[in-house]
Length: 286
Image (cartoon, rainbow, N blue to C red; front, top):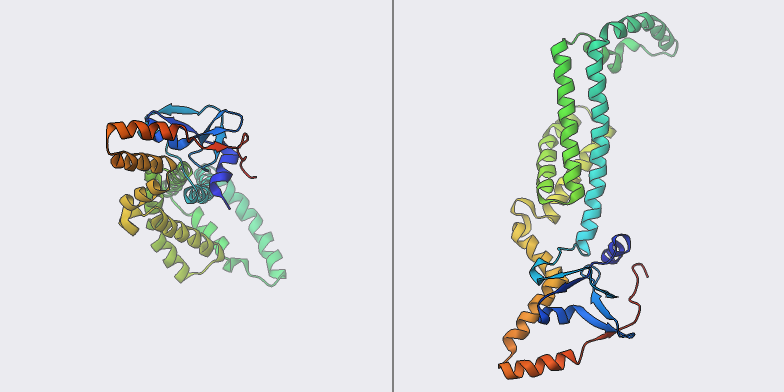
């Protein structure tokens, strides 16, 4: 799958006219109709018409390409999972907070309905008094108001952390990747301990999701110096950049020019050899 072309199909092409003539020549062509065409900085196709923006080559927009587009999609999937988790935890925090104010009425209803529920479950061969859910509910009824408020606050803080994680991952920010990696890693030891003491399918799935996010961020984003760190990550981005390739080619050509007279002759020859592209550049997805 061509992720760059897919991104252009969803968001549109990205064209830029650099002010430097030597770089400019490498990003423009002439359509069969005589119209000027500019190379998309994401998918590399020549798009007929005026460029979207212009200016110095160094100020060209940084455009994700190929693997980075795929990586951004994967991180947004993780971001959605974080937001769904935050929603569930926020609802639970609200329930715990309201439980403090409605505990008396809840306890009265519980004591009133418990004998009937116990009788029904005994007919099915199950003793509800041994249920973990009933034991948890009984412990909740005996909690102090301060403890209930503390639990609600902790749940609310966890929901906020998940929201921040999701925002950073969705935006593809470097700080968001670090934040998500550190916040998720801090919970892994407890999740491992919880799985060892009492294995559960839901807990195991959540553990796998968290572990996959940590490993993916460290390896693909080269966090904390992994695989060369940020310097190697930025170098890979530059090596895949169409604008950077044009800048380097123009600089190499400048170094090869022997004299100002030959430079003028070469420039005239290059202007006469502007590539010609079809009148209609290929559309994304075709």
